[in-house]
Image (cartoon, rainbow, N blue to C red):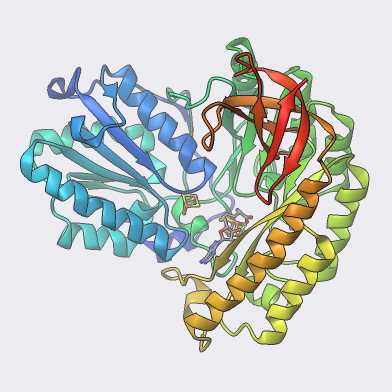
Length: 469
Ligand code: SAH
Ligand code: SF4
Ligand code: F3S
């Protein structure tokens, strides 16, 4: 049995050789052939993409996907550990499956970032004995082996590696969309921001070889995909661990040369954002003018405690450079309120920077202490009510600027990639502008999967309404 160890996870050898290998298929136990499986994924886009792989592996083994939990013989929860409430949701859902398990045979597994946490795994072993198997983010490709062993022994099987991580190419994927695809370019994270659990759960920073990425994009283009989103916890660090003279700017140019219609990338840490990258984004028509640039706080004192490696001034300078160089760019951010020791003055600095930058959008969070992270050990005397109040105040300001940015689009014509039917109104379609604004589109003809020109009729804080022209 392998258990994760978070102290070990931090003792990294930066010069260690990262294992790079190709996926090897293992036959799943015959008892599962033809049975239905249900996968629920929480968390970020990288985890969503892992969810597509879990489905890919199971489907190629002859299992059938269902979105009805009651129909499933195999249930897998692909979890997120970023904040306490992400974990609470998973434990809540587990309770529901426990009840269902009393009425029928279900094989239940947990994977994803929670599975890489020592305390969670210990809790599952002691209190959640009805969970049949656990595997981590580093051995997703070994999932079938873990399931088979669980079936053959009839015991709870926990197999989570506390390693630097590896790069496994060629895992089958059942992609959720036929038009827009996730493409991992760099796995893990080495930044160790003091509040964040990701470097522990996802392992060290490791880039995929650029040849493998280009091959994947070419294949997606052949399959009819219109858009790829290059993924990483910090895509700007792409290549640093592999090459001396090949970075994200080079990769963006090479992906651009494949001729795929749209290229996006998330997430960018302000620390590694180079002028070369800004130039590539502004020069290549198929690299979309959208940057997600998390600031986290507007207070230099808090930024330092967070280990973010930039000051507010440096952030704002970068922000303005991006704004002024890339035509039509939209910029969104992430902000944490209530970091340990955050004073009213610190919070005011955050509001000030939001008023200065006027972001197109922001994801805002209340600080959540994560196991074994340095920030979780800091003295924190701010009551939760005060933190919630700060979040509330911040959201009002953030939403005001989102609405303003969206209102500027009214009357303009925007190219939108239409991904499906609108969730809010099934008589409309939904798509994204080049600068990543969600548009509900009125059209008499089916436009799903196409890039169409849309006249923007009106704006809300989180979406636009428009009509096809
Ligand atoms: N790699 C990305 C962020 C991934 S996590 C980056 O560095 O930009 C997404 C967001 O969750 C972070 O930007 C941060 O705002 C938030 N977050 C991470 N850890 C958190 C914690 N412990 N409490 C509250 N929010 C957190
Ligand atoms: Fe977490 Fe910081 Fe890495 Fe982002 S850059 S994943 S916030 S440690
Ligand atoms: Fe969550 Fe893991 Fe992503 S903690 S945000 S699923 S990297």
